[in-house]
Image 1: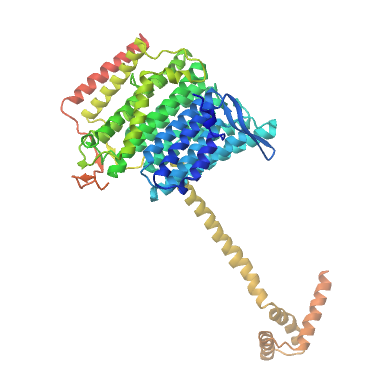
Image 2: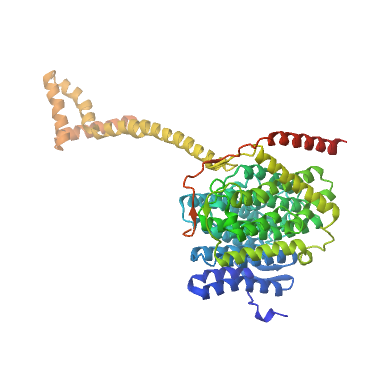
Length: 595
Length: 44
């Protein structure tokens, strides 16, 4: 069925942003319908738009292209619309306009970035995303969320400025605003790479993610998990595919968060670390840059958005019902939240790449691409990371929330809208895992990949079963690290602790310097000049007239009386004309001598 | 949260995992076998 006549002729990103800003004008059921319509309109618009450049506008001296539609941008656009729809269903009972508006403007920014055909509109939508997403953290309205939002926006301002500097340099050097493939080498490309790397949470620029996402609202975290990092993956795939550095950064990115996730007590922080780990796989795929690797990256981004949102929704549902999210506070919830538990397990199985779940059909493409490229060390790191993510996101998250020790909390399932949203995401995770063909058909390159081979299934099951065995043995032998109420600092130490230390150091140095300058100049030299200047005429008069007075043969008490008289005359402002004339005359002589 | 009841009032500061008798030995045996297996895979 041709839906073109029904599609609104506006870029999907603008539909989201403009429609999102109008949300406060609606109420009740109409508001829900309006919010659910926006992703549907966006999806239909994207689906009915043929490949090519659309929505081109003139802005200042630049040609803005708000709709570069091709196979790469379409996949990301589709999944951004789908997850916006699911997240909106999840958020229907929130009743907070700040979150609704921020969520849609944020999603619109991500869609704008995805469809941007030039660097200027890319940057504009990039910053829209940064600002809107900050409100999803602030909207929790706690002291911790405000502090996290402040750190979040500072990091993203830094990233945005790097991107802007790179864009300005590129435009000034080439005269073109076209957003095309780049190679690392020039200052401009490096600056843009760093700016994008901040949003992609590439180490060591990653700790903003595990710092901010767990402090967001229940629904805010679901939105956040989908857009910032994945739009950065898209921009990397568009601009820096085949960059070798990304292979190594990606491989490191998959491995480092595992250790932090195992130590972490906050469930949503564990999920944030696993998000970094999964984006690492995508970065690795972008770095490898072959058709198989790019297909793997795009399909993994697609699947990851679904199962990560599902995991954040299940953790959010638990937080919504119990008000708690730490491993130390939770446990045994499967009895009272069985459906949430089931959805969480489906998300966990998907992220762990169990056969018949979505992660299996996407992640394996990236690992196979590393294998085909004879990258043994990278391949081993990716396998290690696969076992690691099963360990913390696959087992730890459901185990400590729904099983483990009985926390004594007795609650009930979240509202129906939340269950429907989780059910939809869970269905898609299983559907893609069982029948990946529809996903494979929309990937950027033709897919010649069969995930369900005997060797692949057995190999993956071996990895997962040994991971499960390791978890069981570590728990039962008492070697598993204890969950503690603590904040584990990552490289954010540099701005959370180190920054505070630097502030103290600078404060001490500059304040002491200020005090020394105050003593020497303000109180010392200036004070002396001031004191001298305050009594200068009387002093100068005494100094000049006393010898003249002595010439008259006067001495002793008479001279003292004369000097006191001068001082008194100046203090009272009644200087005799003779003295004034004498001083003036002597002053003129002095000037003449010094001439 | 109004539908949530907590039977335990005290907040747990540290959730440690006490060893179950016999499993430390099992852990070391599995670790040794796994290490030997990996060494065999990589070097033989």
